[in-house]
Every structure is written in structure tokens, then in C-alpha cells.
Length: 443
Length: 188
Image (cartoon, rainbow over all chains, first blue to last red; front, side, top):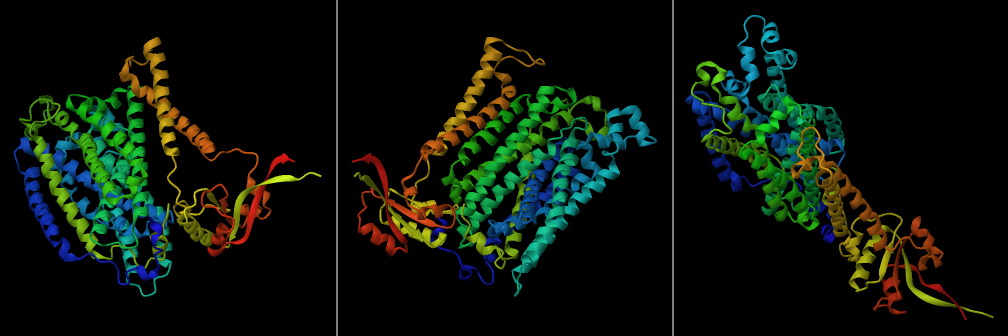
């Protein structure tokens, strides 16, 4: 219980609470090694391998890239939300939000292959049609692809590239600035409240950049896999998964740091209880949004909308989708209702790991079922790039190994950049004017 | 001449602040009292821990109430639209796979039944509404809704004693200690 000891400024680490570099150097080196070797191998697999490997691997890469990007984006979200809502409860864990968010620029770099036409040709049919246009692109589309003609104002190559560059740069600048503002305070001999108000002010309008980034990276990278399909719930759906699972990562990091003897006095059962409550809230929110998306499409039965669920309710994908209903909502919902569990960091961490597994399944089902549909089919007559990919099939045999390979590669990079960020500064903002309020929080 | 018989309710003591009340509550808890309560003009975070109050059983009632709501909605929708009068809407099947169509009402009734269980469960657990409370006999107790912080230890508690309890309350910082008695309504 939080009230055994009232935390005073005597309990706060004067020079900050720093991670012992030697403790993590081994894990960091291994993660970096896997990431570097995996990335080099992936460059071969994406650009130079035979078509039969190269084409399915583009989907593997997209899946892994976007999965880890949602976790980084979520770190930015919690930082922004904590600042803008003038919160005091989470000051002792806010640095972990910032550290997770600070992996965003690095994780976005793993999206660079998706900017190359050699990779895009297997993912985004609309780009192939645009690139194959003869004469004036708009006139061509007007005659050959009416839907793309009407979507031209949004789905055109220059605007797509401009947007993607903005998603990469915009949120990177935001999280870099906010983290710097926060970490500068750690060593300021006269820390006042100026940075607090500055962070609050700048988190207002930059929250819009966050909202646009989570929504439209989802549109530009994921929804565009099938240019005919659209859902206005898409951005909210991806946001729900992002906020939920980045909180799961934050809980895991905090539990680990506590286990290493860090965050002493400032983070306790009350903080884990609050973070667990946020996980419960976003478990419900995810289910609400995901069901709403399904329900509206299922009920209205419009052919251009139902394709998404028809693909995912075919064959074994259906089993996976039903698993998602129970595994991503029913089970964690009932488990997270219990207060004792949320106050226990180890028990909550078990749920956090489980939730992340479900998030992986969720994103696998967002990306991968498109693969067999998009790559197969002799009718596509797209030339040598598609030769020998065979007929349309529910899933491509053996492509699963590529998914695991990409996931491990980008996952290792994510771990490396997260550990690197944790080691750069104090693990909690020790000179923040709200640190004592946060340390003594009770709910 | 008639006299009104009085029944002793217990000791009432005033404390100077929320913090003093909190610390006093811990001592009353540690002295082993069960039939007692704290009174404050506003909620005090963590006072339940200081008083040693066990977690309420209400969440379990609410869970059961909510599940009853889910089951009621499902039964109602399934019975009427699948069993009694199979209704085909937009080519949707009239069997268990129509269940997504029932989800909104299942959700709504879960919330409604949970809400009712919270309200009525809470009222019955705290025994409200009631017409009177014995402490209303004390004129200083009116300040519990304004600026007074009080602890009342009831006479029916096994550890209660006329001198010992008064001494305890005085020792933990209580002032204006008063033995509150209620009229039992029987005239003799």
C-alpha cells in the first residue's frame, strides 16, 4: 500500500536514477547484432531474392514494420496525453513514455523499403496502375480505373510520398522536442515550472500531428493494400491497438526497472494499478471500435466494404478472427477487472505479454491475408515481376517463415533502441515539480 | 411526570484536520474496533485502508448483474427473432450466427443492469435511505457536512468501554468528546 511511507524530497535521487550500462550492454549487443544481420538479409530478401521469396516477404516486412511502429507511436501518445491533460499521477513513469516514444524516428526508418517501387509493386496495386498509365495519368485513370480516378486527389504518388515523409519527420520532431524539454530539467540547478507549462502548451497542437500520423500511416501503408476497400473506423481501430499495447510495453519496462532496483520510492502499486486500468479501458475501447467496424460493414452488406471480412473469414483465417474476439477482448477483459492483479507488477506483466501476443495476431490479420489474394492470379499480367507466383490462394505456403524473420529483425532493433533510450537519461524526471505528487499518488 | 429513556449510541470525537482524522483512524483500527466510522465533509484518499475496511462485495454483485443483463438481452433477442419468429433481414441467417446483430442490445442491457445493481446494491449495503441517524442527536455533528472531522465508536462494539474508549479518543487527538445517546421512543 502506498501509505506505508510518505515520499519526501529526501527520497528522490538527487543526481537522477541512472540505468547501469554494464547490466544491459550484453542484451543490447545481441539485439543490435540480430538487427544488423537481419536487416542486411532482409535487404537481399526484399530486393534481390527470387520473385517467389521477394514478393511474399514484402508483406512480412510491412507487418513487422507496422506492428512495432504502433508501439512507438503509442509512446508518443501517452507522453502527449500526460502533458496535455496536466496530469500528476504519472510523472514518475512519464520518462518511460518518452523513451518508448523516442524509438519512433528509428522505427520509421524501417519503413524506407516501402518507399521503393521494387517493394511497392507487390503491396500497392494502385501504384502499379498509376505507374503503368500512358499519357496523362488522370485521363488514363478516368478511362481505365474509375475508382482511382475519383480517389486521385488523395491517392497519387507525389502526395503519397509527401505525406509519408511528413509522418516520419513530424512526429519525430514532436517527441524529440518533448523528451529534450523533459530531460533538460534533470540537470537544471533551478528547475521551476516553466518546462511543465511549455510541455503542456506544445502538446496541444502536436496532439493533432499524432492523430494524423496514427490515422494516415494506417491509410497509406495498410488500407491502401486494397485500394477499393475503405473504412472510416480504420484510424481509430489502429489507435486503440496502439494505445493499449504501448501501455503494455510501458508496464513491462517499469516492472523490469523495478526489478533492477530502479524507480525506488517513486513508482509503486498505485502506478501499476493506474496503468492496468488504462489497459483495461483500451481493451474495451479496442473491442468497441473493432466490433463497430465489423458490425456496420456486416449489416449494410456493401460489396466494396465486405471484401475485408470475406477474405479474413475464409479458411483458417476465420479461426484466427474468432480467436481474436475471445483472445483480444473477452479473456483480458475479465482478467483485468480484478484490482489485486493490476496492483501486482508481475501479474500485470503476464497480462501485458499476453496482450502483445494478441496485438501481433491482430496485425498479422490486418496485413497478411491480403498476400495470397494480391500476389496470386495469372490474370494480373504484370510481367516478369509477378511470374511464377501461382494462382490466388488463401495463404502462401512457407511465407510464414519470412514473417517470423522480419518480426525478429525489427523486434531486435526495437529492443535495442528502447534500451538505448533508457540508458541515456535518468529513468524518472527527478527534478520535475510534480514528482512528489506522483510518488504519493493514491487511487 | 414522565422521563424519556435514552439508549447510548457511542462516543463522538472531533479531529482538527483530514490528516489528523487519517492518523487517528489507523489507531482506532489497530485497537481492534469494528463498529465505528469516520465522518468528513469530503472524501479522503486512502481512508478505507487507514480504517482497515475490507474490499466491498459490490463489484461481484455488479458483475452478476451485468451478466444477467447480457443473458436477458440474448435470450430476448434470440427467442423472438430466431426461435419463435425467425426473421430474415438483409439475407442474414436466422440462427446463432445472427448474434452480431444482438450485440448492441446485449451491450446496452449489460450496462443498464450493471447500473441498477450499482445503485440498489450500494443503497442496501449502506442501508440507505433511512429517516434518522443516532448521531443527529449531537449538535456538533452538523459540522460533519461543513468543516468538522469526526470519529464515532459505537457502544455495541465488543471493545467499547465508557472510560477506556473515551481515553483512547483523547489519546489519539480527539476533542469535544461526547457520549451520544438517542431517544428510544419508549416513555415510562
